[in-house]
Length: 447
Image (cartoon, rainbow, N blue to C red; front, side, top):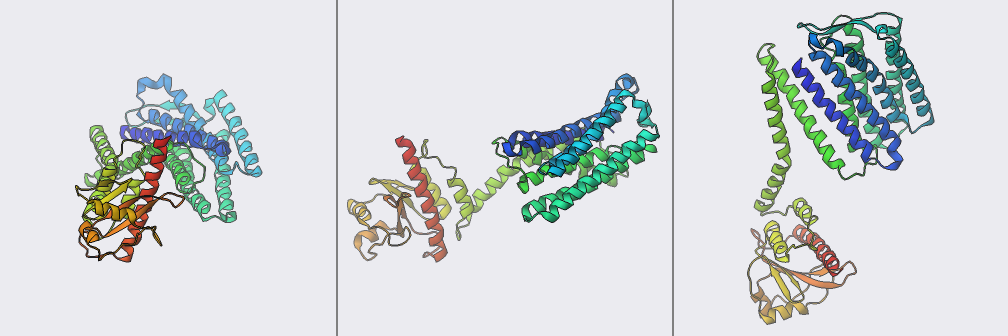
């Protein structure tokens, strides 16, 4: 049960983080709905932590256990109420339904807090497994009936939203929520309300299923833009939630395979923790490995230009800092696969490699007229001066207003004898982006 407790606590942290990210990252218009989602994650966290403590409790903990057991019953009431609020708060009928179930939940909680024996009469802490002596009376069936009304209400609300929605994006998000909640609601009813009448060994499956659904809710918020999340640090929290969720899924698979291979035996806590830490390290290194893979692929693919990688890197360039135009030219030459790239601004040349240009060559470049179409400037290929330049093309760098402020000199392509139409389009797109970067950088420096 210690391993189960570790799993529940880990998932509870993920659940709470997703609620924090949504609440503090939501815009003002979505703050009410995000508050309901946050409350659902808080109560789910309390539910899982309380059950974790109950599962691993020792006989000497008996005096403090009633409060934890009480929290398991109380928190489970308000998880689904809060989820109903998140789903339906935009509609008048949804507000009425949420407030009604909230009032019923508070009513049940008041009775239970006043007399916990309405649901259980004793706590059993034993080496063979902890359990409760359930009081199978009228209040217990009322407690079950509350869920039997609330869960279908949530499912019906989601179904109505799916049928009425004209947006594939919203419909897709609600469908994920519907499937997840139908599964988790059924599992909670079975493993936390019905099976405990005979055994408590599987009581942890209910909160695990509900928390998984809440994390799926969070996924739909990110994937289908169910809420307008604008906070910058949301990316950090989202990354933590996704990475740790992946690690938890891996650990569950590892646990199942280990138990199957070794005939029901379970790995030690040390082995579980070591595997968890190692998979976290691997997942944290995944972005760096992906970046390295893109870098290497862009360098070695001489037959084509990796537009995605180049544009991604250029979008991060800030020429108002100490970025050198010569470094920029070197980057372009390496990843566009040209022998040479030179950027000329105010007769100053920043080249990817040392190359001397004669005064006549610079004069010729300066004298080229405005491009008739696109960025490429026309020149006389038969002239002796041009042939000495050993260039394939020259493109104009222009401001957003169309004024030329510099030029890009393009050398011979590597592994190709000439430009294809696709090459020209790709290079032109990159040069236009370079022009925007240099022009905006110059304006920032001028300020």
